[in-house]
Structures are given as C-alpha cells and as structure tokens.
Amino acid sequence: MDKELQSRRKYYLSNRDLLVIAVLSGIGGIMSTYIGYLGNLVNRVFGVPFGAGQFVSGLHIFWFILVAGLIRRPGAATAAGLLKGVIELLTGSTHGVAIILVSLVQGLLVDVVLLITRRHNLVSYMLAGGVSAASNVFVFQFLYFSGFPITYLFFIGFLAFISGVLLAGSFGHSVLEIVQQARPFRIAGASGEEVSAAIPAKEGRASLTRVRLAVTTLLVLLLAFGAVYYFAAVFEPPWLGPSCRVDGNVERPLSFQLSDFARHETTITAELKGEFTHIPPQEYTGIPLSSILREASPLPEAKKISVIATDGYTVEFELRDVFNDDQLLLIREEDMLRLIAGNYEGGYWVKLVSRIVVE
Image 1 (cartoon, rainbow, N blue to C red):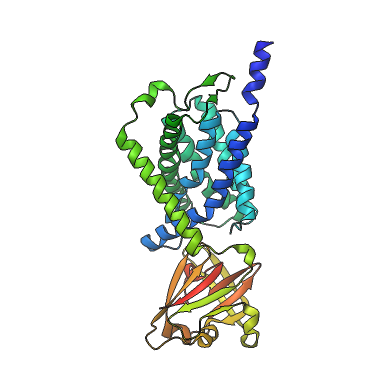
Image 2: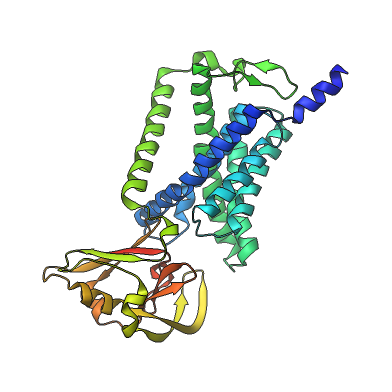
C-alpha cells in the first residue's frame, strides 16, 4: 500500500503545486511581451530585423525552470507551458494561437530533459533550458514553412540554446537557490518525501556566495524595473483596438483610426523582399503615411520619423523621403495596423503599429 501511495504522490499535483503553476505561468505569460521588447532592442543594436532577439529567448523558459524546481514532479513544466501559452494568446501575442503550441512544447521539453537526467541540478537545468529555448525556432519553422536556409535556422537555434542555458538554466538555478535560502515553504519530492531545498546540498547550497547572490538580485531588479517602464511607457494593450497616434515635433498631435482618413484611401501593389522572407507582389489598400503626417503638420525642424509597434519594435525614415514615397501605406490587417513599405526591405514592414514619432 505504501508503494502504491508513493507512486500516486509522484504524479499528483497538490493545490499548492497548482497555485505555483498558475502564478508563475501568469507572470510569464504577461512578461512575454516585455521579453519580445527586449528582443527588439537587441535586434536594433545588431542592426538586423530579427534573429538576434533569440539572445533573450531563455527568459521565456525561465518560468518553466522555476516551476520544475519548486514542484519537482513530472508534468509540472508542461502544465505551465500550456497555461502560459493561453495567457500569451489572450494578452495579444503577435503569433496568434500558434503560441500555445510553442509554449506547450517548451514546457514539455523541460520535463523530458529533467526526467531523462533524473537530476535537479545546475547542469540539468542548463540543458533543459537550452533545448527548450531552441525549440521555438523549429516549431515556428514547422508551422509556417518559412523557407529559411537550414544553416540560418541552426544558427539562430544555437543562439536560442545559449540563451536558454544562461537565462533559463543558470539564472533559474540561482533564483531557486535564493528562494530556498528564504525558505518560504518546503518542497515535496517526486516520491512524496519533503526536501528542504530545490537544489541538493551536495551542490553547495549552503556555500552560496554573496557575489553570486548580489549579481542574481541585481539582474532580477533590472528586469523588474525594465518591465515596469515597458508596461507604463511603451506597451499598448491590444484590446483597445487598432489605433495609432502621431506626436513629437508636430503642430497637431493626432490619435486616430484609419477610418478617420477614409477619403485618402488608396491601393498599391507591393512586394516584400526580406533577407529570408519573400511575399510576391499583391495589392494593399490603406492610407498613405504622407497623408497622415500632413494632417499632423510636422514642424520645420523635423527631420525624421520613427514608426513604433506595440512591442517596441521601431524603424526610422527620413521625413522628406516619406512625403515623396507613395509606397508607404498604413493598412488594417486583422485586428492590427501594419506599415507597408514597398520601396524598403522586409524589416521595415512593421506589424502592430501604434505610434509615429516625428523628430
């Protein structure tokens, strides 16, 4: 009977376990847009429209490592992945319903790696974080058949793997050590017995250095303050509808919907020529960007504009070029605004446009 009870406990999620999964998945789902914003910042630093953002993809997996380390039962990270994906979808993920599958696979892979290694230690967490983070590259490839060269896919997959090793595995391990130093609660092991820490004593839990504690705490604070800034000053809730505003060096700042400029509506034919993505020539109907800017009346000293998406992705244009370009069009696509930039490469075709800043 004792063996049967222990076997049942091994796979049983208590109310506390479910609460931990719900809380961490909720925070992770909401933070996903901020992580996307960080990825866009990395892209801008490297001067590429996508790919370099995989450097921060490990932060998506960080939450699954925490769930796995705190609960230590098979299936906990998988459940967290499913819930996190649903929350990302409901909070306006640009990936649509596909994000549920991506997040579910990521949580499942964390569980699989930890089940195979049979360890909850730094090496296992780093391996689980790396494999899980890299999976998003190949799941999206499977879903959308993007046609990217295989060498490019493995390259950005490798970037994601390194990010998962560092920002999910190593960082998650450090945070778990800090949590268990505080000992807010005890953790039940897979066989039902209670263990006093998520990290076994032989790994040096008792010898956690002040330097490591300080570095981890500093990173947590930086991420927290960055998230507060993002949600307070950058983020545009998708449920407010596809609207946009023009501000900066203009006489008349605008907050508008495309229907406000219906009299200027026009149709163009444009072809998206990205480095790895190509959309054949097709018709797009919307409002010329120049018509919107004329309504706002840029001041004489204005030289350029920045087109900004809800997740912080930004592209810049010279103001004089915008007024002379009839291939710059703002259109409504599903429940978002998108910039069509027929004379520019694919990185300038911004989705989820929410703001135009004249500088």
